[in-house]
Image (cartoon, helix red, strand yellow):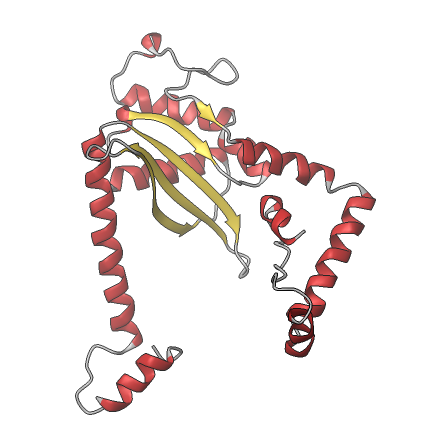
Length: 238
């Protein structure tokens, strides 16, 4: 609240009677809102019956590995495909088995039945992480979990990796494929040099109010900062 000028002014006016304004209380209120929203999303997924798990993992600016988990499902009321963000959490172990277990635990906490999961997808994920998520270790882990559910793997008709049958079909979006290609091609010196020039040009204007003001007199288009981690977002800056 201290960084919000409007709330700061409100708190000044009610300084003598203001309650529930400490950082601890604020975080607790935010967490309660998160729980309520997550429960609503889980209820909608349950009404839809079937769902797909979406995963996005990146290194934050604070150098922490963070994973976003989302769900894709058919809205039972509007009959429209929906994608809802569920959780953003820090992960430490990036091995396929550990990531798979992390995701499954989160899905179980939502009260969702993995037997109703019909897809898995990773969007804009680092190349090494994508390989690990869909690798042999995750396949074996999922195989063990399915057997614990008492299901007969002989009846599984999904596509598998390394001859390990999988309950769901791996889906890699076109944007992810483009991201992987560009990430690999960035090893070429000329491309890296080009991106460096673009980045420095953007920063020249971005970090100076005077230079930005001069630029605005010639164009109404704002320069966008070149994303350090996602190639798919760099085309806007270019």
